[in-house]
Length: 168
Image (cartoon, rainbow, N blue to C red):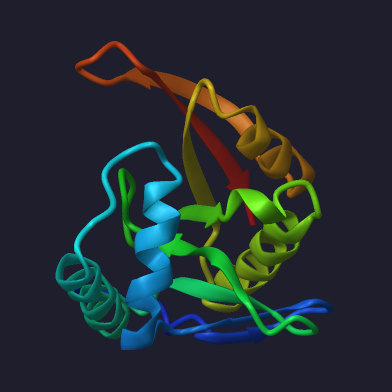
């Protein structure tokens, strides 16, 4: 993968949050977060492979999802970052997922705003976010951080995926 952009910052500190690169120990909480999606939790071995893969891809691509830890409480509440996903290395997707217990406190907005700044610092000109049409909370976050709805595609199961875009 050729990448003409410098790597994003893999350690970001905001007013209330600390975003950082994945550690192998993150596999256990990652399992719990995936379980909140209403799907079977991955095994610890599978979760560990995913975490290691995220680190390796970050080194290759220069972009990554980062873990989110609350500064005061010290607990991990989810992740946020840049991925290729359905897009490209030149115009990556922003993605975030937080534990339900912390929803509604502005953490996703705060983390995503910091990730946008990190993307700007790499020289990127546009970001995407693809969101299931049912995910009202994610649309609210995207609206707050300057994304606009661009177009929709549909999965094989008929679920609408809404493409949101932000010029940087």
